Structures are given as C-alpha cells and as structure tokens.
Amino acid sequence: MTFKIGQRVRTTVDAPAAEGFDYSAPVGSLGTITDVFDTFGEAYGVLLDEDPDQLSAHYAADELTALDA
Image (tube, rainbow, N blue to C red):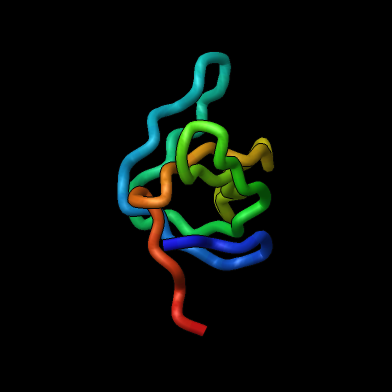
C-alpha cells in the first residue's frame, strides 16, 4: 500500500526506543505520515500521537495500516 503525507495510520509492530530516547511505541499506535522515502523501498516517516519528543519514526509500508476515513 502507498501512503500519503498527512494520512492517518496505525502501526502493526512494536517499535523499541531509539538510542538515547525513552519512548517505545506499542503495536497499534496511531500517527500521521510526515515523510515518504523510496530510496531503499517503500518507507515512511510517522509522527506518533503519543511520542513525547514529537519526532517522526521510520516504518516500512508493511508495518502500517491506513485508518478508515
């Protein structure tokens, strides 16, 4: 599936905390697509609603599902 910037999504995988950050995102986290990367395949920057640092996390297309409008 191809996602678009601004689209709302739900994660389908747990994401451990990145080095130097305490926040880890559980499966089912909600967020918004902020970036689209296709250099190494379909990947996306996602700003997760609950991330206290408000930094986009990288997810592969198969790690996300679109929310119904």
